[in-house]
Image 1 (spheres, rainbow, N blue to C red):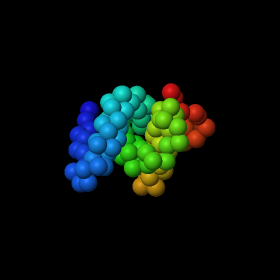
Image 2 (spheres, rainbow, N blue to C red; image 1 turned 180 degrees about the horizontal axis):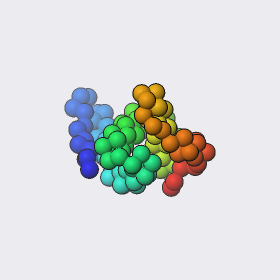
Image 3 (cartoon, rainbow, N blue to C red; image 1 turned 30 degrees about the vertical axis):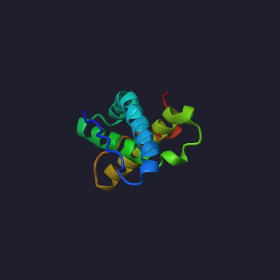
Image 4 (cartoon, one colour; image 1 turned 135 degrees about the vertical axis):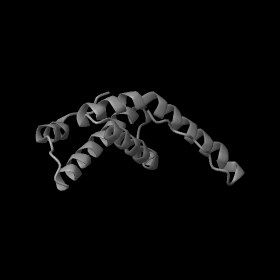
Length: 116
């Protein structure tokens, strides 16, 4: 299992406190949601290395796009929506490169709601 190392920015003293809090808040959410997101992704791809890579991508995308989250209480749903979309993209990439894809899985992901 991988862990997230959080390094706060060191520029502009006035913004450091706000940025540090944002980093710490995200690090706490990472610790809180990582086991569930990993279980969700692994349950669909059935490969530990692929699941680790995909979960890393989920949290990276969530971190970069955190400013687009409208309601803090919807973080879990939003995060699992990102995970679902990344799994679908992964399946499509696998198919493109000639690997066997479980189309029932892809179709079920497209229609399911996020597990919360």
